Amino acid sequence: MITLDNVTAGFGAVQVLHGLSLSVEAGRLVAVVGANGAGKTTLLRAMSNIVRPSSGTITFNGRPTASMEPHHLARAGLVHVPQGRQIIPTLSVKDNLLIGAQRIAGLSSAEMEAGLQREFERFPVLRERQDLLGGNLSGGEQQMLAVSRALMMKPKLLMLDEPSLGLAPQIVKLILDTLRRLAEDGLAILLVEQLAHLALEVADEAYILQRGRIVLSGPASKLRSDKAVIESYLT
Amino acid sequence: MTLSNVFQLLMSGIAVGAIYTLTAKGLFIAHLATHRLNFGQGDFLMVGAYVTIGLMLLGVPAPLVLVGVLIVLGLLGWGLERFAIRPLDRAGDQTGGYAWVLTTAGAALILQNVVELIWGKAAQYAPPIFSATRNNVVHIGGVGIFVEELAIIAVAFVVVTAFYLFLFRTRWGKAIYAVAFNPEAAALLGVNVRGTVVLVFVLASLLAGISGFLVGPLVSVNPHMGLVFTIKAFAVASIGGFSNPVGLLAGGLLFGIVEAFSNYFDSSFGDLYPLIAVLILLAFRPTGLFSTRAADVR
Image (cartoon, rainbow over the protein chains, first blue to last red):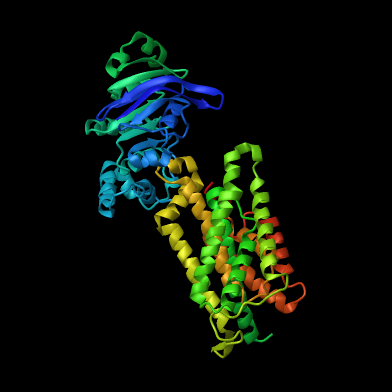
């Protein structure tokens, strides 16, 4: 699905990611865990080509992404839910759900309507709020909307940047349970999270990121019992 | 002043106000998506008026004249984004935050001089577009109204309605709101941000072109008329609130009507009073009549 090979990226002269390699396959939920400033957000931004990697290669569905614009990647199925959810406050919930889907080539109106109904089933509160402006939703509802909006785009790889940020525990659980089910249905998911215990609980595999370098990786169940991980992230 | 005078002034005010609204909408849409304004918006209108005069004097039928104006102004809008806006984006912080004021005003100066070279300095009147003579009048409730003004009002309102439908009902309109909110987030939703920015500058230019097409028979056309229209469009946008498209319509009509009445009472300084009124309004209500800070999408 997606492979990063020795990717280095940053801002001008400041390097944030140092030779990162990782991969995510269909049907797998992969977590990237790290403290503030470890480079988690920059990793996702580099994968979406918002930040252009200075070296290394990223291959998505067998195709190098270097020459692709962020909107081309999104339309090709690499869908990124950014930190802070970025719900468009002046559009209705329904329009927020449709805006990405309307850019996917070959997606018919009937398919979009079916997608809407599917997402309303997944998060019933969105059906109730569909005519409200996105900016009027609570943080939890906005996160549900952000996930649904991304799913409306028929992603092949779904990347989420700290979806737990600022949310109540029961909403975080609802979101993570949803991601788990989506992975079991065959979707590739890359979850970037600061709350390691939550991420390692739902993930199949995980990478531990420290100052832009992967210092540990492996099955999430194994990392949950790793002494260094417990000391640094789970206590 | 008779009731008939009042009604005629109202119609004249609405006609010219509708044109100000169209011009101000060009400012609004570019500002919405890019936080930039075309300081030559009135000069784009002036080019629209001259292209209209040129084609009409060649005997081209009015609908084809409008098509010609739209093609020329569409190209100008594209050129403005390509050569006066995009290079500044590429240069980033090196140009400072407001270099676009100079580049768009510079583009306006170029347009003024090119038009002066082609058509000369002298003021011209466009032939009437919608009626055989300028003084064709219809009687509504015993009051005579110029056909040209009625038609201008009708066309302007059709364009304003089409603009609203485009902005609120189409996927492109929603893309503009997405880019206005956050270009990076819009790109992650598959929106072509650069394409959207080009689109808003072309749209702004087309609105100025339609204004120029309509305004020709109402005012004298000269190569330096644009600045006044730019200032009035800014005034209208200020009354309506830069982030409120419905407020712009109300602001444009209000400005046009006040201007019509002030010109009736003082033909020498009639244009001045509505501008002073706007200054006083902004002193007390900086967000305009129809907008609040909270309503701003940014």
